[in-house]
Length: 190
Image (cartoon, rainbow, N blue to C red; front, side, top):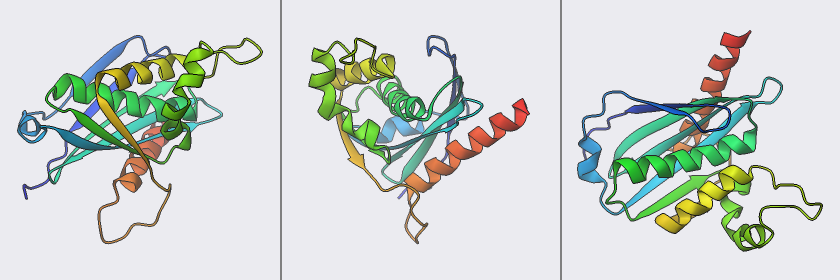
């Protein structure tokens, strides 16, 4: 097994997710050799509900190698951060590793994991409720559905906030990254 290498890929996204600024540090192309067909991606999102500052993160795991991506967003919600973590993970793989044919997304968010089952219902209703209001997070849900047409995605639900054991638990790690990013962002505001 190759020694672990951690690379941070930070994305800071505007309120509307329309403007992206990417910063990739210490990326040498090492991972391009390893990522061929399938990769696991652990994702999480977190939000300070009163200040509406959120963060998302993802950990790619493949062949003993790990890569971490993360970002901070203002004027957001918890569910938006959970969705954005998945979207940015998929986007990162498609852009940087075009040979990947399948992604396993592991998330503790029932909201995110269950969206694909609701795709037909949401699409046929044109992402509107019975009262005619747009479904919450419709902009991000549409992007996620577009990606499911481009690459084979599998979603796996994992229990949140499990205790650390002797083996690696990337869900705990990605949760810690998100919460730290939110705490740091809040500290800058106060």
